[in-house]
Image (cartoon, rainbow, N blue to C red; front, side):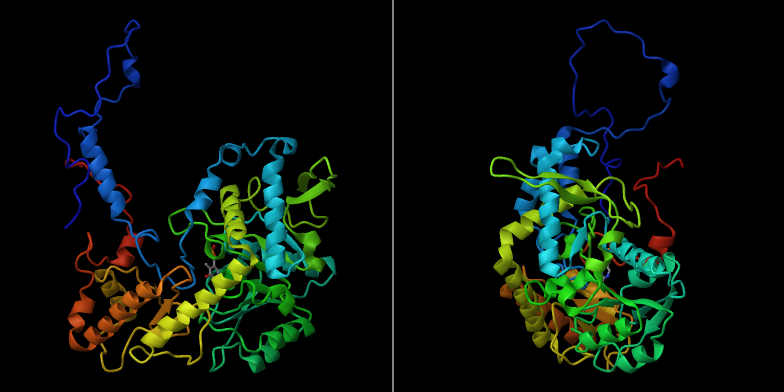
Length: 487
Ligand SMILES: *Cc1c(COP(=O)(O)O)cnc(C)c1O
């Protein structure tokens, strides 16, 4: 079944609005500006409203159900974030307004920088990067600028564990580094012996995700960081998985030199087609001068009568500007709201429940699915979506079948080091009832994989469009939903 397009619903002569005759004299419109043929659909207002309201309900989103997309932290986005981001004083500011006229915006940015410093244990934060991937790029550029500032130009290698997100090697390669993979050991930690063998004075740094993309906290993280530091390298933290650590461990305290935050993951700003991301970067004291420009600072201390004066500053050895204006301001307001609403205890509970929820799900699914790294997980875990005794079934089939059970599928085929990976991250915002429904569906699918594999192979069955050829969809993209018949 395909949905009718608005053109197919069109009925000649039907109108949505009838304009009154104008009360000014009519003049001829310059005809050369008119198109000869403009085949617009003809519909009534209610036709249009029903059509688009129906289409909008075809989207699966966090407001309609569980979204266990591993690594993406698809937590519920509290509506109060939207309320504050839409306050006219925030929503209607122009980015070219002089700083004196936007002091509250600057105060909010400054406070968010302070919150992120406190949460992460870093000494400086810049809110400018527009996404996690751009934060990584900024981090890698800072690492290079730091080594260069010391006249150390032989450091050309960036070490990246084989469990890393693809953006890590991409950011490093784009910044001109040679990417050197570091293997994981049998427990899913960085292989220490391999790391020690690679570390020398050509290493610029290591990009480490902790907990890593297997959802495992690296048991040797202190040793890993010490090893890289001993070789003169810096350690970059991919902060995408910070949702496991809030109020429990601070990357700055663990010895990381710099890290990006994903405001759209950990701090509940909408993402995944729902809005722009935001990837602020935090650094230790010795890297503060390299941060991108601008950073918000107090220019003049306040007094009892007067609030402080805020302004934009440029770090002394800045890597420069990485985005127009000042970052994704709307996301900054949302993340600020979320942090203020949670408070320190609330944030700690966020991580405790995120980890508890993931472990609860893991305990229900383990056994029916192969768990390649048999450890307690953090905020997410990775299973194999295949079985030796059901050889025709793949992770993709499990994911597609979940759609028949009205759940968004988990992340598939990532991380690359797990065969037929299904990466599941329930987040803290799901109730036990929802987790149980999801677990029931996953267990049913594991059973079907053995008894009725064809049900999985042909899924999904009752979505508006059945299984897509994803390669063709990507390579042969049709951006126009309707092509006139005579074309
Ligand atoms: C999401 C993610 C990124 C990239 O962040 P974006 O904001 O999507 O650019 C990097 N690393 C990991 C582990 C992630 O999950």
